[in-house]
Length: 499
Image (cartoon, rainbow, N blue to C red; front, side):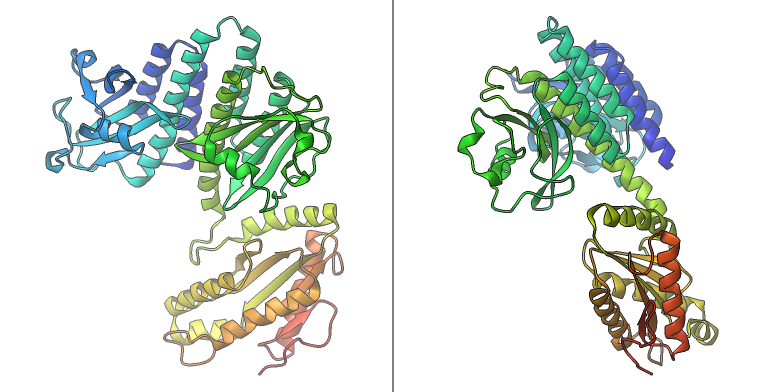
């Protein structure tokens, strides 16, 4: 399945969810999309009856006319197990799977995906095929994302029936949802939805905070208050308030922020705030936070619409992340698996702009494998390819997480080092040179070395072309000086004078 087809599936499903608030009509459209795109024999959505703890068919394609009478207890069959453990369950051959409970004749493989609203199971998307092992990992991942659209449909329909009189807020939710599902670039999504939330809901300032590894990062904000963090900055480790807010999974309202220490504050002039966790499949993605300069501003705020917005936002973030992962494949070098020149051209422009904005330095290292042509001529291209793979692995292991290593072309590599001065960059480049020189390359009966050139923004260049030209000239100088050495731009003396 192509990248465009994947994006189309998510887009069509999103549009189906947003086309109407009638749950039956939306679910039938979602099932049709699922059947057509994934070539399914039968597909159904089963809902969970909270009182009996049984699943019953709400909408289906391909099942028998008695499907509506089927009741599946929690924990029974693939659908019941998926609902119980809150994770997709797959049987590649139901004839050999003791968990399988027959609901349609001719089924060979079956995939059951729980439908989640926040951390609660509301039903199951059941997909059946008459082909053996019909669902590969990529299809399961995509169907799992696709199932969030069915969850959204159910949630939207429930909200509409409960909140019909609150037309203004429903219109705001729908507007945000339409915008969120039409934007697939994460950074643009975060900023645009954050702006819409601040305009459509009460409060003076809206922030989106995303959990990344063990930190909470401010990713987007909009409003009239003064934020204490810049976008991209993380809250201090000791600011445990956000850990508690995420782990609890519930909305947290603080009416008087003057009683809280500065490390727990988001906006300097905020007097009250409300934090809504964004959760997808039980995993906290981050927080949607509204702040006000008035104390106790959110004391009587209806939280249901905000929860709906957070759910929509969570689904949109997951979609954007998935599309981003697909697009990343275009930025990977097919031979080495590291980033390619196309990605380098994108990142160097971004990093120069970021360094210029914050007054930081940015270092660029260009390295080249010495005498690589003779290696290919003497030992063949297969060995040469393996050398390039191992060199790229060595370079990647020696740098920080914020650094970027790319294959520039042939046997040449580039490394971007944000917030790094020339002395530090020379030290890194020398570490890379030493790592390659000391490495024993299997099948290569001689020592392999690299030469490198270092250039730093803004000292050696203010633009992409100037910086690359300076680093390239330093690399050429290192080659001319005898190889296996590092030179900085504008320097006649090598950092190392090896043979």
